[in-house]
Amino acid sequence: MALVAAKCTMCGSELTVDNSLKSAKCPSCDMEYIVQDAINYHNTYNVTNIGHADQVIVKDESSIDARIENANTYLITHEDYSKAKEIFQSVVNDKSGDYRGWWGLAGADSRNFTYFDCTKAEFDNIKMNVDRAFKVASPDIQASLRGKWNQYMEGVNGFRNKKVIEHNEYKAKISSDMERKKVLENQLSGLHQKKNNLLKEKEENWRRSQRPILTVGGGILAFFFILGGIGGSGPVAIIIGLAIIGALIARFVSLQSRNSSIEQKIKENERSSNSVQNDLNNIVKEILRLEELMNNLNKYI
Image (cartoon, rainbow, N blue to C red; front, side, top):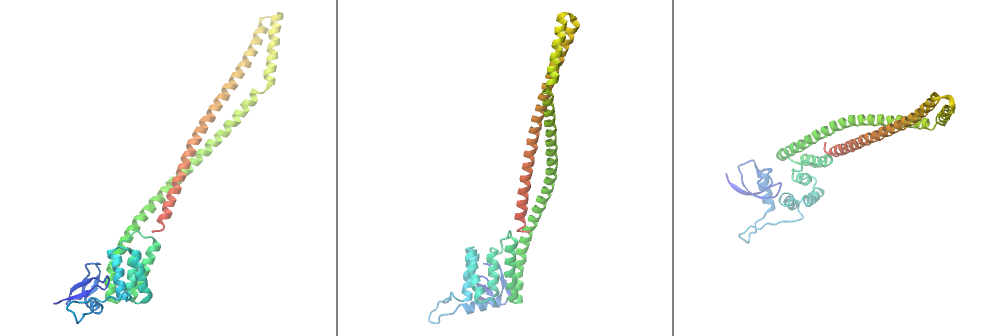
């Protein structure tokens, strides 16, 4: 066993590894790497300056390796996902056969595989880059990457399952509210019909009160009976005349009382209609709110 210098093939961190091992996990990015690949990566990236005792690190910022190291620094250390994505995209543009570029793009879009509440469109884009990384990576690298990808998938599926439950709850609530809406609409329709009947009854009562024949004719007849009684026909005629006048007065009072009763019923009907209409408006608003929430959830499930 010997400890030798190496460099993580994913994030570019400097390592000290046991060269007898086949694979190990990077303490910086928590990704598995092939030990020999990490040693080779270090040896091709660092050179020794023969004229000095110290090791001199040569970094060509235009090289693929340097850009990947820089991108991983932005991704993991600074959590600057936008800048990391920009650099990984340049790697893909220059060397599409390097899995690290595609994997880096997926890592940037998924916030280093911690962004579980992504939309379907965002996830599809992440998965596309992961699939491209798998296509160009060696079997050993694929195996090391797949563990992290599966872990990320579990987080995304967990988030989606919660959204499905929310979606079903909203759907059930909308169904219940729609039934309540139908009841309120029927109730409101019944109240409107009742009001129409009351208005017709009021109009008929008004017509009765405007019939002059009964009022004028009855008054004239009562006048003649009373006049005749006074003129000698006797008290019976006077009594009949007074009875006619009393009947006319009773009729007038009855019509006024009936009219007042109808007015009161119309007012009660309008109060009930307003109350039901307010309930109906609220239930419609609630249904629209729930439908909007469901539409938002559709982006995730």
